[in-house]
Amino acid sequence: MSETIKVDIWSDVQCPWCYIGKRKFEAGVAASGAEVEVEYHSFELAPDTPVDFAGSPVDYLSERKGIPVPQVLEMLERVTGIAESVGLHYDYDAVHQTNTVKAHELLHYAKAHGVQLEMKETLLKAYFVDGGHVGRIEDLADLAATVGLDKADVVRSLTANEYLAAVKADVAQAAEYGINGVPFFVIDGKYGISGAQDPDTFAQALRQVQGEKADSATTTATEETHA
Amino acid sequence: MSENTTGTGTVTETTATPRPIIQLLEQDDTAGGCCGGGSCGI
Image 1 (cartoon, chains in turn yellow, purple):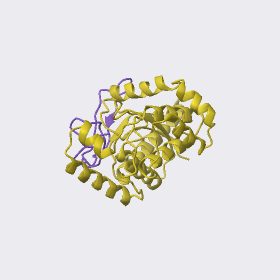
Image 2 (cartoon, one colour; image 1 turned 60 degrees about the vertical axis):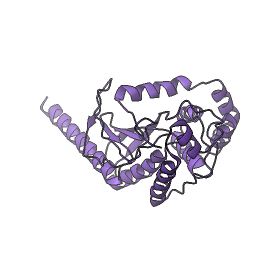
Image 3 (cartoon, chains in turn red, orange; image 1 turned 45 degrees about the horizontal axis):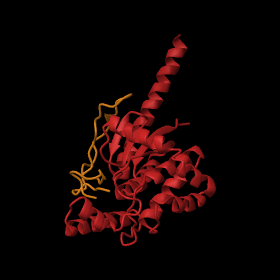
Image 4 (cartoon, rainbow over the protein chains, first blue to last red; image 1 turned 90 degrees about the vertical axis):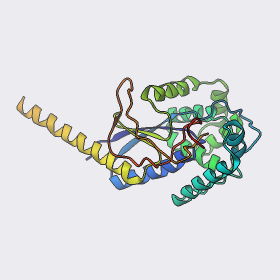
């Protein structure tokens, strides 16, 4: 029986490559046959964005980041095509650009209630596919209810900033690790993989860690035999 | 939200605390990633 491998993933709900990377990582895990325990961590790409930003991602990227509109459109077309290739149907015309700090707080709340993975998938799908709003507390509470969380308690938690410190701790940890882009995968607390890599890259990394764990277990057993 | 305009992902060898993350394998440096502005795009 193989040992479970811990994988920590830094990600933002409004990062198009994070959703693509999630699918590729999941395919890599399946190909490797490894047992993994995944924990998502917060990374805020645009913490200065108002919750009710009055504009589209195109407006945001062109006005706030100074990227020419034709270049923005080309980037979105490209990432939408790649998303399609992994079965994700991005709808940028419907995306609500917003601040994601409350979504990150919700992910910590969901982790405390044992449904972080379901919440992460729900938030990404809401943002990129369904045209949902992932910045407002009421909208987030509605999404939380779909994974079995108590809507009223989610509103209470988010209003009280219950997990804000946890979000900031994740951001600080990312900085300590030198992470400046997402998705970023930390495998077994040792190995870093950056970006939406192909499934094979994840599978190879997981197989290597599996091998190291097996070698370590063998060494330990041998030492105990000779003790 | 910011995307690397070239779709470039990077392998990061960190000086992390409490434990260092070390580079494991060769990774595709054209894999996409988001980095919140600056040198990146989306």
